[in-house]
Length: 120
Image 1 (tube, rainbow, N blue to C red):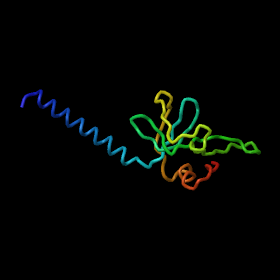
Image 2 (image 1 turned 90 degrees about the horizontal axis):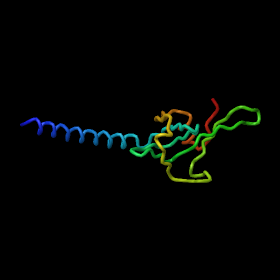
Image 3 (image 1 turned 45 degrees about the horizontal axis):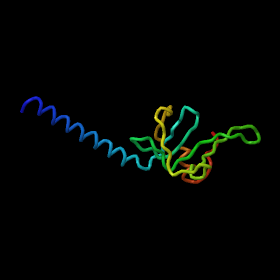
Image 4 (image 1 turned 180 degrees about the vertical axis):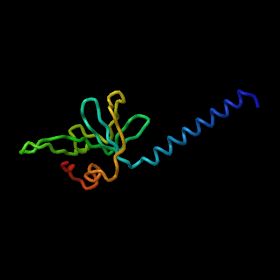
């Protein structure tokens, strides 16, 4: 076997491995909520998918002040927003950070119970 054949075989194996990792990642993270923080200061929570950063089952995290002046947080489903949508496609250049949220977080508990996010 010459060097070109060996290089080609290794390249094909690498491509198959990468495709397998992508498929596994997509399947294993199917129902995991993620947080996405944008350069505009907006915070979104939803199920993030790739290769195009897309949020489904998305919420926007809004900060409001109660009458006593304390900040409270509210999760507003994008399906109830004025510009309601099933999914939101994100511009990677506008994403400061993103990451999966633990299932035990207050945000996920609030989503599952259909309530606002409790105060800190």
